[in-house]
Length: 386
Ligand SMILES: NC(=O)c1ccc[n+]([C@@H]2O[C@H](COP(=O)([O-])OP(=O)(O)OC[C@H]3O[C@@H](n4cnc5c(N)ncnc54)[C@H](O)[C@@H]3O)[C@@H](O)[C@H]2O)c1
Ligand SMILES: O=C(O)CC[C@@H](O)C(=O)O
Image: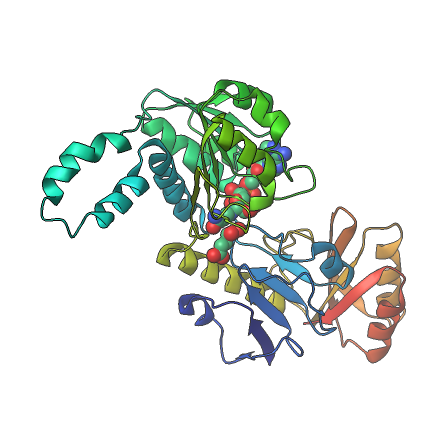
């Protein structure tokens, strides 16, 4: 029986894919697998038995990736599964920043009891006049699953769209409209654009990338949209820029104690992926990833281990080994199995950064001796028999 724990609610359409071989448990302690959305796992004790974590979403800054890798725990995410949900909200954010829709709606509510409300509306509406986005310059930083959809949608709305992503994947490059102006550096976006949206992961080199220095390069009255993570922006610098009018509006899907009540901020309560469709897509993808890994040792969409698909084991037993990416591992694995006079019918080894993963299909029984010897090899982090 595979035990799994959900740290956040996960859509039933995904959980229903688990068969009778899986049991949902309420505590993390004895879980083989975990499903999570935005709950922070950074300070959790990770049980020895834990083998896989699936993040039903894109951002994995709530999961201690290196600590997991070091314990042989494979972390998955669900690339692209919520991208359309976020794209639609970014377009809404663009509109909210350009037209004072929020201010106008709130004002109507404040005068709604007045019997002359219709007249007052016509008289007072000019306070809420805005700008159109047609023909304006729109910069997208990060052309991944979300950035590409946002860039293409903005282009279709008649904007002049600039995109920047030094690490763009071939798949995303194929999907990017050829009408998007590709620029080499973020500085080109900062200097050129009336609206700037960030769609990069929160990493050491993206943290606080929007700060007083980068804002200084921007046009006066720029609009900044952040549907990625709050820590991408230096909030103190943003406050200054909003006060001076350098930044006209800051739209964020990640309000915090500093920005939630800040003048000039349009704060949305992390709703980017909160649609039925995105939640379903993420749940289905996350559960399939867990099942593939638990049942076949297949790794797809991992963020801390290499992807590896050895298909279904056609002979005897499958041994999977999570290990450090260091020399001489394979010869020790094959030597250990061969010493027991067992034939290896299939072997795959993949690596990603400091970590690697090996699948051995063997023609014979996996003895306790083999498992102990494999576990004793320096650099081996987890051994499983499937
Ligand atoms: N608001 C929400 O609910 C919500 C939902 C999904 C994702 N997100 C956030 O949005 C981020 C992006 O999501 P995605 O699905 O597009 O991810 P993705 O991995 O498909 O795309 C991220 C892109 O950023 C690029 N990138 C990385 N570092 C960069 C840098 N320094 N400069 C420019 N580009 C850089 C990568 O090459 C990649 O193409 C996630 O990491 C997450 O933090 C938020
Ligand atoms: O799960 C969510 O609601 C948000 C997910 C989003 O922030 C992500 O990074 O995918």
